[in-house]
Image (cartoon, rainbow over all chains, first blue to last red; front, side, top):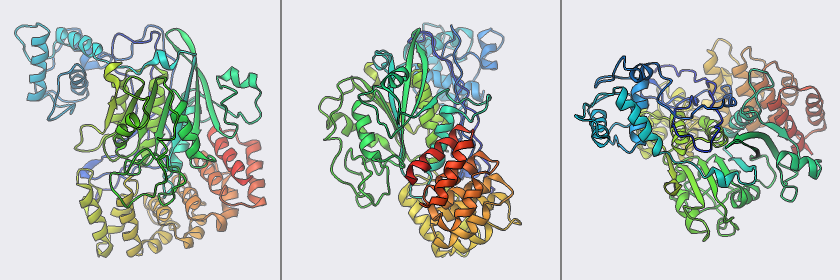
Length: 417
Length: 180
């Protein structure tokens, strides 16, 4: 058996805050990072569970765009007319072109964005060229096709409803990390905290958050960092920073709920009912909902619906039925196994939630614990950087890439955004 | 054996393969199983842990985790295996592994102690609060949260007063709150 390679986290090269609410040019962010679970020889690595946490964010520069096919040496050459990409080409530039094709609506149903310029990609490219009025369609990526494809992909981008999320100048968000019976949640909490605040060195400031202890804070101190004194949880751990959206300051308030948080289940349920953004990283508990304690206990389950298989998880009453969900727009991201099972419950049990006021990012397959922290950080960074949902999902796919699988995520409800 | 680790294999087959390894005579069975532990599939992992117990892997891991002649990766995986198996007898070897020359093993040992039972390792964990590796300090603080004693609390408070790393301070603060 081949030795399992070490999977060290690369720093998450991070993006750039946008200067406009919706960048016109979709562009590829330098992204994530964490390691795919899949490895050589058809084996799935047991990844370095305690690998160094990713670093994050850098402030954006004015005028930078968030998604572009430029920035890749080969594609830059294509853009300048010095080369073209033909059938048979392989590698990252091909992957980027394939992602752009998919984003622009030209499906690659059999092979997806696999980095191999084969017949399927050629056919899709010809279809795009035909639709774009390029005659005759060559199936070759040249400068004109690249420019057109970039623009077409940009038009198809879908964004979380940032204007609604940031309308009061504050992003209230919660990250919940669920419990694992073998303690795999602990390295992920470590990773998330480091990803938020850095490691105390100038080289790694994480996403630039500062930890804020509200225990003895005055109302003025709370307001200054964006925490509503009437809603503050004095026992919680908060992380705060200010970022730019559409030229205005927005205060990001992140509450971290873990299995160590007293009354974690109740606090996470409250966040689901009120917060503009909620992220969960942990076991999906067979589609029944987040869980902040042992699978054999009902105390920590936030019950959203029935499990898809009986006999594995003990559940109490349905919590979603008790939640007084806000009518305001919310973005929820659930990083765990097959959390897409939550979707129907989230939009049918609370009578006031629908695709217009609730967008959900969920997984469609089994995931790995060592990606949970990176998933949560990527989602948060994507929102505070104003990224499109397409880009956030693409980044999540890279982090969680598994051999032989094209996609393990779904972004639901964004069609009307 | 490869089926256990294969993402593409149907879930039921992976679980079946993990269970089948319980009676394996192959010396690689334990290593294969331990590398499946990061899965988020509870049923698969339960099957893996059950098979590890049937293979008496606890004794193998307890010996490996402190044997410096064993490659670092195997010592680290031994600590990971012990964390998932949660055998009370593992606390002492894991406490000894906190003196391992490599931080990767010390991190796993501290993390494992938080799940296995940190009380017998109290003194070793207190010493680990001053480890040069920030992640060892982080997991030592987390493990000490489970040792509800005045001595542990005093050590956590003392480290909190001098700790500079923000993530370790987070762990120490959480541990302090759990002690109270």
